[in-house]
Length: 383
Ligand code: MG
Image 1: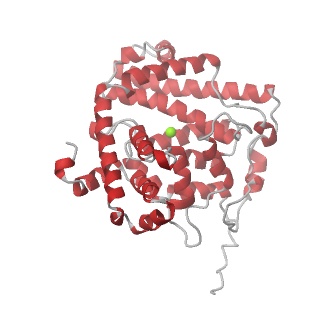
Image 2: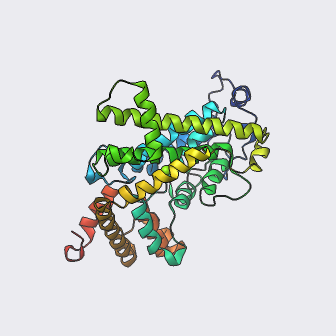
Image 3: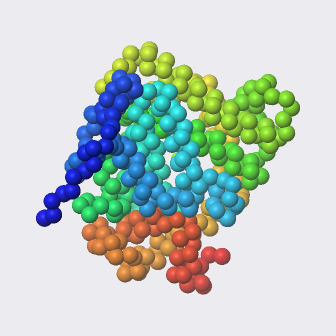
């Protein structure tokens, strides 16, 4: 065996442990307490464990493919709206703001944010529902669980193990997304990402829907959350053009919700005397909006469901996407020899349907459409 070359021992650095001891709150998760990885690896000479996790996620194929996966609106509707990748960036950005202000572990938060939607199949929730039906007898399909399959099994980046071999805390954080409301409570780093996800999608789905003309600014301003933001913006500026007003309200919505989360969270931390991660585990949900904002967000979500997610234009695309996906699934179940080699091998271990599900879930919207046109005979294809 070749002797391992020396790592860069001369690099001057402040140890991650020292840096975190100086900067993080006692209720934050410190890297020194990490339970490590399933396949043990020596520490990196100058990156902490969660920095490595973040980098592994960013360099994965599944992460790059998020750029061509639907958030809510498919690519053919235009190029203004969010993709699954830009949504992920917004969540990571809001999560880091929250984490820094609360003196939590930003590296862990960032890794959790970047992995949170990694398991989304093509065509967003429409795709997820279809795959769930296709795999009903095999235990179904959920994007949260699929993210774990990707990082533990499907990504091939390292010679010694399958997947990305992420820290156990990142895997556990993603796991809690599938079993909400259970004890022990998730780390505050996990709770922050959950809250940031909701701030991000509530705000950007409305913005995208406005740009696409599915709703009007006046309709959005009829919801309490938007009305409050509109009032505060108008009191601060001269008369604004509708487009200026819309952009100012969007900034205000994020700022207001993040400010509310920080205020409420610090109060709960103080009131419940949370002074360690052990106390976090017994404390229930700590990172949550005030009751007022919580109710206003629920109203906004109902509004978005009714006027945006169920809009006839969105539903027509949804139906077409589901037919694509279902026919592709059936095609590969009928022709498992056409799967890439590694999926053929896994089909033998875990069954054809699950392996086909893994393959189809990994496709981007664009790739699925292209493969569909190539493989599905025109007489059976959807128009
Ligand atoms: Mg998300």
